[in-house]
Amino acid sequence: MVGKAKKVPTVNAKARALLSQLDDARSLGLVLAATRLCSDIAGLAEVDRETQERLEEQAELRRSLFAQLDQAVMAQDTQQVRKLYARVNAKAAYERTEEEDAIVSRAADHFADQARATQESIMAKVAAERAAADAITRVVNILKNLNQGRYRNMREQVETLVRYGEVAGKRVTVQQI
Image (cartoon, rainbow, N blue to C red; front, top):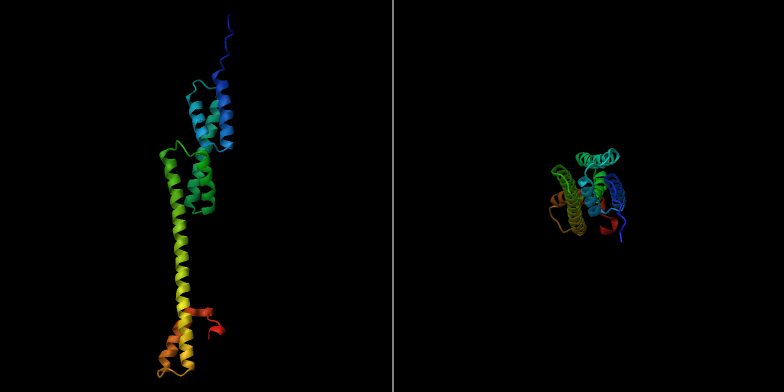
């Protein structure tokens, strides 16, 4: 029995099929599959001009994405960095160049700096609130003691009261006095 010879797809047909699979993998966020398909496409010899143009287009999109991320980091635009960082990790997480790795590293450093600044700001607010709470307690105690006539040196107590009153600010309520 003589079998039929299988049709072997041309290089261009293989490339188009792989490009279609690549588009699907990227749209679904399948980074490993997309990376493997890029390698497979690059390994094909003698691809036609259309296929080569699509590959170049994909490479340009990748360069543009990293350039946008780098620009957002330089501009300290945290919202844009967050958006682009997610896209970079979804679409170009593997086989990065040293330059691409450096851009991603700067973006991660940006997030760390933002987190550190936020933490320092929160800590400063907490410290201010603690100082104000302490000042309120002291103001209330001084006022009670002044009201009861417990001090001989009123001037010193009034100066202390003014100093703590400035720290306590508007946080002292009538009910506390």
